[in-house]
Image (cartoon, rainbow, N blue to C red; front, side, top):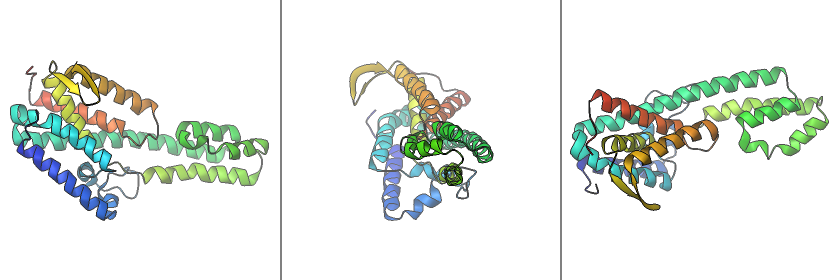
Length: 259
C-alpha cells in the first residue's frame, strides 16, 4: 500500500506545487476556487481547478496523506494509471456538483428568508433568522438583540437588522470551496468497496478496523455533519459527493470487491 505509484506521485507533486504557487499569489484562489453558482465569481472551470487548491498546510497534508495511503493500491492493482486519473477527476468534479447543488438550494432558502424578514422585521424573527442561518454570530449579537427587544419599533434597529440579514447573502456567495477532499473521499470509498475486509491501522486510532466499517462510519458522519453542523468551514456534502460518484463509477466499470 505504501509503494507510491506514478500517477499518485504526480498528483502529490502537482498539489504541493500548486499550493506553493497559491501561497505566493492569492489571486489564484480567487480565480480557481469553486464559488457558489449563484455568485458573481463563479466560472465553470472551477469545477476542475478547485481540486488543486487548499486552505492551509494542514488541509493539504490530510488530503495528500489519504492519497498516499489509499491511492497506490487502487492504481496498481485495480484501476491502472488511466482509469485512476479518470476516477480522480470524475469523483472530484462530482463532489463539486453535489456541493453546488446543495449550496444552490440553501441559497434559495436563504434568499426566501431574507425577503420575508425584510417585509416583516421583528426581534423574534431576527432571532429565528440568526438561529437558522447565522448561528455562529448569534452569541455576539445578543446585546443588539436585547436592545431590539426593548425597542421593537426603533427604526434604527429595524434597518440595522435588515442590513445584517441582507449581508448574509453577499457573505455566502463570496465563500469558495477548495481542496482535493472530494476526490480523496472517492478514493477512500473505492478502497472500502473493493477491499472491504482488509484491516487497517489508523494513524490516530491504533486499533485494527476493517475498511468497510471505516468507510461506512465516515459516510454516516459526513451525512450527519452536512445536515446538522452549519458554518463549520468543511464541505461535508462534497465529501459525500466524492463517495457517491466513486460508487457509481465502480458499478459502471463493473469492478467487484477483491478482498
